[in-house]
Image (cartoon, rainbow, N blue to C red):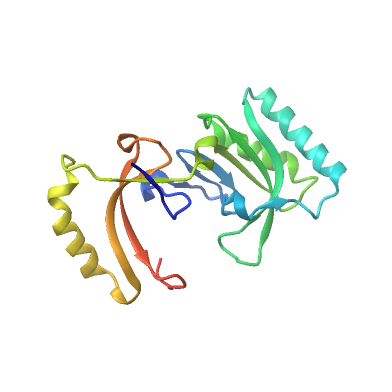
Length: 198
């Protein structure tokens, strides 16, 4: 039995490829040039651009994606919150695809360059539909290799961290897939809400 995890999206650090132009790439996402949160619960349609311009941008982006043979499930212009500056809202061309194409980074840059003439300061996000699913957490099976090492690992982690704000430490199979074996083994450190630790 799985439970919905309280986190949005999690990857190993080595899964995230950062590029000098501000774009990032993960197994399920490519976006930039400003890193934004993807919580769809907190986004809104872009209100600072008139509807005609939004329609032209969506039409242009759709044409580019079609020419590049990228089938998309959803395409819209939204406001997303910058993760670097709390005050910054970024107008974003938001593209949801069934599976992230192998060359999604080049396509995101192409979209950004084409659209910035009409929408300066825009960002582009191309994400797999899998990212819109809530993350699931599953117990680690007794047969998994991490289990016999967990006491040593947990002591090492707790010996390294400032424990003032730590409320939990656990090891789970964690991810968007519906079965445990398709999700990665993940160490989750819980901290008090409002903690300065990250």
